[in-house]
Length: 133
Image 1 (cartoon, rainbow, N blue to C red):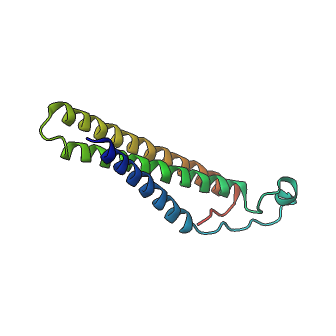
Image 2: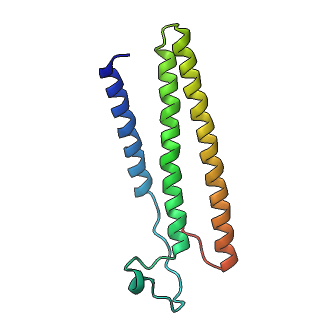
Image 3: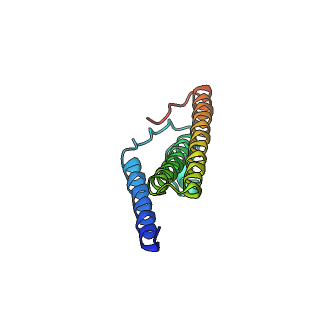
């Protein structure tokens, strides 16, 4: 593969990841404000007035979305390498390796997201807070 083609593929992958990251951020719903518990988050930290648990959940969702996009790009890159291998056993084995690593990464990311969602949901339910939707 020529350097020019590699640069184009890498540029496309980066733009693809950024575009979907922005789309994911735009589609997020605003967090619900919590009742006043006598804690002054805004005055003490200079941050917004949303519950820190909801903020943590939103940050985790954004991070997992970005990591998932990276894993999908790796899988697509592996498929592209396989399609352009031209019958070369070395290139096909490299592509299979990339595909396997991408799938394993995606499974790990999905498992981490599931665990984090369960833990944060349980914490929010246990403390009587309403999760951000």
